[in-house]
Amino acid sequence: MANEDLAALVRTIKDYPHAGIMFRDITTLLLDGTGFAACTERLAAAIITPPDLVAGIEARGFIFGAALAQRLGVGFVLLRKQNKLPGRVTGVNYALEYGTDRIEMHADAVQPGQRVLLVDDLIATGGTALAGLELLRGAGAVVDEAAFVIDLPDLGGAAKLRAAGISVHNLLEFEGD
Ligand code: AMP
Image (tube, rainbow, N blue to C red; front, side, top):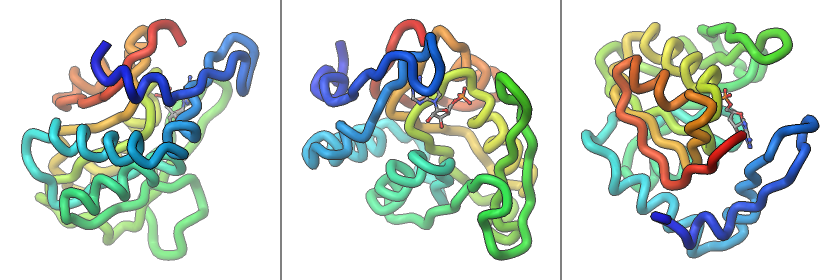
């Protein structure tokens, strides 16, 4: 398997946060300095066109997104949960398994035409990433690429992003959910 060294650093916790979920815990990967740095390097190497900005999704997307922004020498945009940002915001609601959620960003964070790389730790059903994409494109950003440490391909999120015109980069894949 590609990136086997990194796969070995991800801890799987069964039945968290609900019965039936295999939670892929990246905190153990973050504890390993070499592994964490390798994530940044390898994701940076996969990027096709250098972005103007990196956008990270709260909360674990901030960790990998900010590291990647530093590595690429560009700024970082926070896509946050509702009511966390102090300035004027723009937001997108999206469906969860039960109920809805909302992500927001500062309305003046991204200028029309800026190329933005979307980053999160993991893509599952893609609901979160698609909401981030809608938020960024709604602000006029050009979003052609997204980067994740982990893809759960059986849940279909990466395929949905590709259908929306995105080149999806990921280092690891885990079967099932
Ligand atoms: P989704 O919107 O279904 O693509 O879910 C993606 C978001 O939920 C990411 O921010 C992940 O951190 C988190 N997530 C979903 N499923 C898992 C899982 N099995 N293990 C760890 N995190 C997950």
